[in-house]
Amino acid sequence: MPLVTSTEMFKKAYEGGYAIGAFNVNNMEIVQAITEACKEEKAPVILQVSKGARAYANHTYLVKLVEAAVIECPDIPIVLHLDHGPDFETCKACIDGGFTSVMIDGSSHSFKDNIELTKKVVEYAHDHGVVVEGELGTLAGIEDEVSHEEGSYTRPEEVEEFVSKTGVDSLAIAIGTSHGAYKFKPEQCTVNEKGILVPPTLRFDILEDVSRRLPMFPIVLHGSSSVPQEYVKMVNDNGGKMPNAIGVPEEQLRKAASLSVCKINIDSDLRLAMTGTIRKFFNEHPDKFDPREYLKPARANIKEVVRHKLIDVLGCAGKA
Ligand code: G3H
Ligand code: 13P
Ligand code: ZN
Image (tube, rainbow, N blue to C red; front, side, top):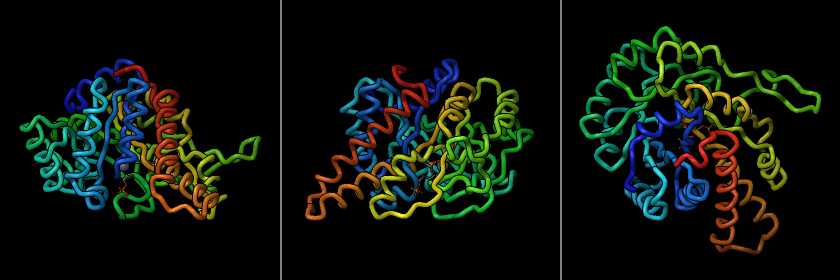
């Protein structure tokens, strides 16, 4: 089947109490790893491209890689989505250039300016059969090289006005997740009986309030990597230095997926699997220099991380 929008996917996900994985893609190996796992697990998927990915790999290369995945995986629905679209022009370039979904991230603007910008993107996108994700509230962490020290939670009292005035198809909200591999400072965490740091619980009260105000409306969670400690250790054991890398516990994401969250964004976990695997390979094989030899195990490990997410976290395996 050709690329699809997320409309049907989100409707089924909402009703079925699961979420669609939105994985960031930057190169061929990552596209292959994600889509092979989704093909084998019969899972619908969103492949998303950030401004940084377009700058790194070039718009056309990324679209063609995703089109190749569509040919290789004819039986699963695939969405091509712009992640954190910074302005109208970038959204327009992606809408004109083959994407089926865009995010306009107006979260750093005032509420009024966010509405105005998002509405402009929605009008253009809907005229072209493309769906739009908006954002209210800001996540802590790094968004396209801009660092937000402190996030600010979404204000539930703003969501109805935002959605009705803009016409967005889905809404990203801030309930305590953040971008990158360092989501929580150790001092924000408690220590459990095994000596493991346990991060603070996400603000499910905000999610529930938002969902009450927007019945059946798809909610999106950014910054939802869990930062698997197995890969943090692999990085650190092989010359890396990632102290105190902490992610969102997977049980909390599973709970969010069973509620109104229909799209869960995961990027850092795939980066960690790739980097850990390549570091280990180089450590064990200092004489090797053929990129295929280290990209192959990296791709295989990303694929297993994605498979685990589909089955155990998102609940979307078998839903294609
Ligand atoms: O939210 C950001 C995504 O992880 C993409 O990151 O801007 O480094 O491509 P990037
Ligand atoms: P992570 O950094 O937690 O993987 O979040 C990715 C993301 O939100 C992309 O938009
Ligand atoms: Zn994000």
